[in-house]
Image 1 (cartoon, protein in one colour):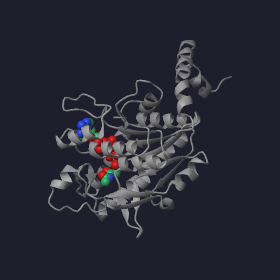
Image 2 (cartoon, protein in one colour):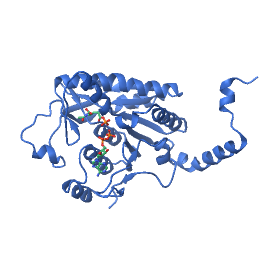
Image 3 (spheres, rainbow, N blue to C red):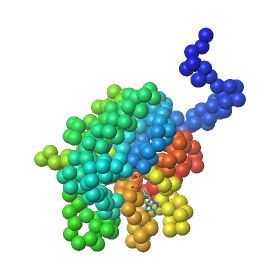
Image 4 (cartoon, rainbow, N blue to C red):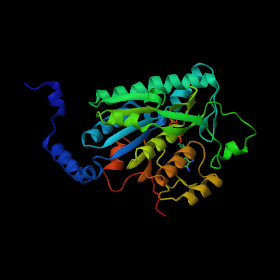
Length: 307
Ligand SMILES: Nc1ncnc2c1ncn2[C@@H]1O[C@H](COP(=O)(O)OP(=O)(O)O)[C@@H](O)[C@H]1O
Ligand SMILES: CC(=O)N[C@@H](CCC(=O)OP(=O)(O)O)C(=O)O
């Protein structure tokens, strides 16, 4: 007699033929990406629903099984916001970055390093993978410094002196901490918290960490999963294949603002520093990551360093 689990896994003939056809079509992509590193930024907005979270975890496990080296960097902005709200700690964003005082930093560490990180690790493990979670403090893996205000941050440039507090940027990634895990067939799940030489913690936008990790590991792809279909123009059309100059123009005229600013900035930096392509895709779509990797059409916004 077959167990309920075996029955659940049994497909009727028509479905089995469909599955076989899909698997066979995926073969050239599997061959192309097998052995390559793909860094996936999993945004807090894309993890609000249990079904989506589970489909994400399954995609990651499948990638690993076909020989791709997936590295996860996660966000958790909405989840941090919820706890700050419960604790009646006010919060605000400037150019997509959360102004972070000491009390906020404690909450960021609790939510990102604790709840969100372990939730993703457990999901991947429950789906048959071996994931291990870490923040930039583990093994001194993300050396950080206070964020320097740059031209691509229009609100920060405009504001009268504001102290962004513990908002950080990546100074250095210690690659060996990650390769130690990947060499043991473990999927790293990274929370975007950095530390300086004095042990001070920094809250770093997860897109920026994902971009730097992708650069440091010479990744084939950087995939940024978010809560929108891609980079859009003012009419809501998806923009793709942009170069640095065009992006600057879109920042100047206000088409790119808020949370899209760090995303687009890190995608450009990544492709200018050796990552083959960066993709901003809709994390609200089930199996978005597999759709990006295993189809020619791809989805969302593609950024390369080609003119
Ligand atoms: N040109 C643009 N195209 C698309 N989204 C944009 C654009 N400019 C600003 N945004 C905003 O950026 C948001 C994505 O950033 P964010 O909310 O920080 O996502 P995540 O949590 O995935 O990092 C979009 O939901 C949208 O509100
Ligand atoms: C400095 C800064 O803004 N840090 C982010 C870190 C989390 C993050 O990036 O989360 P999402 O990817 O879900 O937006 C924050 O505090 O919300």
